[in-house]
Length: 125
Image 1 (cartoon, helix red, strand yellow):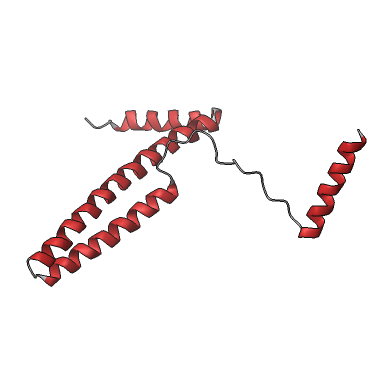
Image 2 (image 1 turned 45 degrees about the vertical axis):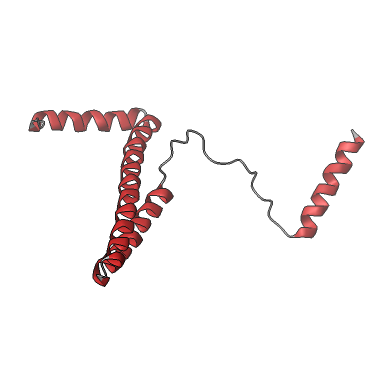
């Protein structure tokens, strides 16, 4: 059952007030919608890829070249859609991926001098 115009307007106002009061929470809610969409696209892409394999083999077995080509194109399109969904994020990671520390800037000699200074400072203490 669709919302009436008044209900839709009230819902929109509530969403705006939530975004104004707690932007982090509102962004988390918006992100979950995108995550669910990307997962759905990824699942459909995998199914399309499997269907493309079936069409490719069916075209090869029945000697219908056009069917095999259509299956191959379907596989390519499905792989493209899956990779786009993967790039946008399909996993439910709660933590940002900052496992590796940022690489220091500067050339090799500068980094070695900095490490040497840190060692000397730690030895003096």
